[in-house]
Length: 370
Image (cartoon, rainbow, N blue to C red; front, side, top):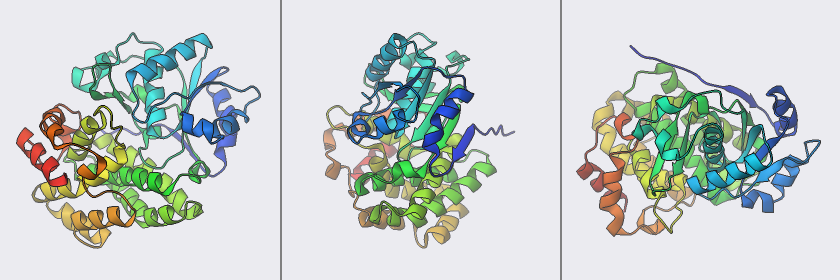
């Protein structure tokens, strides 16, 4: 038996950000907290979005590159002090995931780790939660239509908090919000979207609709990513990348795999603040090779779609769009690899890889990508 569920309300079109006040009103939000990051504030986007409202919303823009429980608690203080009744998340996956953590703790007692999937926390998450709108400014994580938030906990672990209740009430996908994204970030977030599509398709769970969406997202994103990196104002490429990112997250309800099981603990390494999408890109070729024997005809289907051996095509794409080829080039030290391999076994994505990996397997994959 397969239990299949999809998803939340999605509004997708250019210029939709201007309608955020209307969407808030539909959800009964009168005092939203705008959750974003300092970079978007510096670029003027926070003020631009706030200007669409009759009164500037309260703002929390302290989202770090990899969201932390400490930042969630800071945002919670702001939420309570401003007597907010809902959340608008503006930014990439970090801001959206932080907003989901805030939404959870607005009506649940900390610590966040109590609600992590690997700690049996799914059943502890109860509704109703405050309404939340997610407006992505990158095309990668797809967190705007995801049921999870990946957050670095107070104990240093980077864990996934998962529940259908965490799905944003409305995802407002406006490709115009990605027009100013720099090439490097376009490349990194774009590879995150492709990794979601690839890992979902390879996952052994039974969910044909998810596989179909994953393949459509992969084809769309693979066709658009180079153009989006080369010309950040290519409207068609930006539209396709935002759609591919959304599709990747719609699909990964089916489950991810070893790429994410490794990238999550790598992203929690102190002092490095490694970008999640870049990590996924670097790890993908090795994991594709590792999974080849387990996915059978799916390998051949991917080869047709991508125009060559999937591992080789992805490695070439990474190079073409300016991403590093190795973990060492990202600043990862070899001494941390054993601990990362051990941590990957405890990640919520470990169980849905098509070929179940051992600690030794994970260590070998890390060495291959190093």
